[in-house]
Length: 356
Image 1 (cartoon, rainbow, N blue to C red):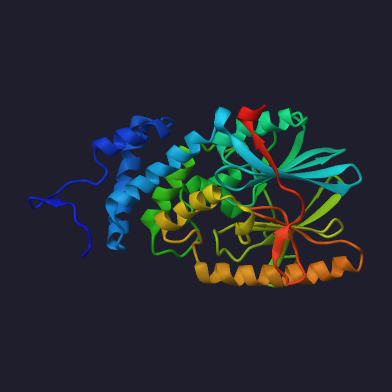
Image 2: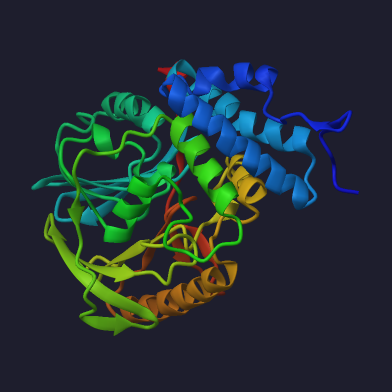
């Protein structure tokens, strides 16, 4: 039987004053009017989850767990795993797995630094402190920023960085619309909007005042993916591929041929290289929006096509004595083993703020 919140014939809200007080520390950036609208959104989302057979108390606890987890993993409790990879010609890629959310990728080159995906806003200062501890001047040298899609764990700190981020026009539209369901056919509009507001607010998303939009005119195809633009930085030439929109509309992938880098964003992740805490945290989205992908069928197609292309590119690079580096949205920078499975491309190192 579907759970009910009927009491003596009169409906009482799931999002009552007790729950509101519990989560107010995580929505302090909202004014009273915005907070009221958020609670109405959340009420509608819980009602839809109940219709889908979820227990309302469990759903509300999982929402609260986002704030509990993020607040418990910042400041002196911040930890991260990272890889430092030489790209030749005095260039390095630092790929940082945050305690919650997607990876921050920092290219260090003689021409300055480039950030590919920014992580959550609440992690920005912790990552900068981490970089300084490891001998890098934080984000002071950043000359270019790219956001692969509109989820807060990939563009939530963009507003802190000193340059306009490059993104797909639909990514900007999603940020303006305030729901990751924008531009997609989804049966769960209330869930997508509520989740977007929750994660953006709890993670202290800092939306940039202005952005640089990439082109969307297909120049050629790479498999199923249109090549819509290109980017030059640090002696590297990146193709920008448009996704099919399985994970979220407007997602882009990047490919650098000479070095052999394929950035797949959240279309590919390497779960085996993620800690259990990170895997558990990532599962929250699956519960609250039924699937982390706005279209799971398309997402599967993208996954299979990216792996097919990765194997093809890796075979080409082997003739030059190189290996393709697959930079996933979550998990370690990876290579393909002899069986075609993703494995960590190099040692994963650990950073803990309280170990300084």
